[in-house]
Each structure stands twice: as structure tokens, then as C-alpha cells.
Length: 72
Image 1 (cartoon, rainbow, N blue to C red):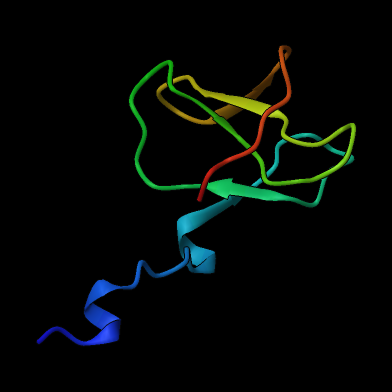
Image 2 (image 1 turned 30 degrees about the vertical axis):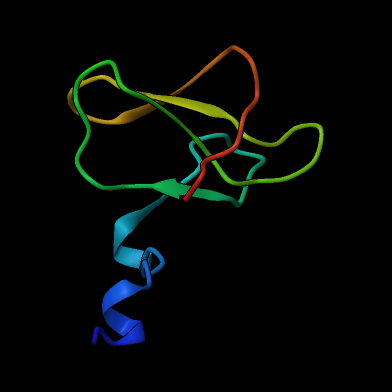
């Protein structure tokens, strides 16, 4: 028999999330290690939410494009 803790996916802690790089957004997105060129989206709701971020190998950069939401 497995425990509930063993089967439940835990949420991301503050150390595992990055703030959205858009200056007007206070949302976050998954901050675990990324591959160069990988795109992630912040978890902000609403018409201006889900800003896309691309990892350039050094830092996350906001990119233009379709707004989506992380599935974390």
C-alpha cells in the first residue's frame, strides 16, 4: 500500500519558480533547469496573462507570441 504523499505531486516551492520577466506582471513560472531555447509561460490569468519566456542559456527573456498557461 502506498501513502497519499507518495502518490501526490507536490507543488513548486518558491525556490523552484521564477518571477515573470514582464515588468507589469507579478506572476511566476516553473524555474527548474531549462534547455537553451526552451519556452515557458507564466501562470497569470486574464487577457494579459501567460507571458512567454525563452531561456537563452543564461537568463529568461520575455518573448512575443501567443499567450498560454503553465500546466504546473
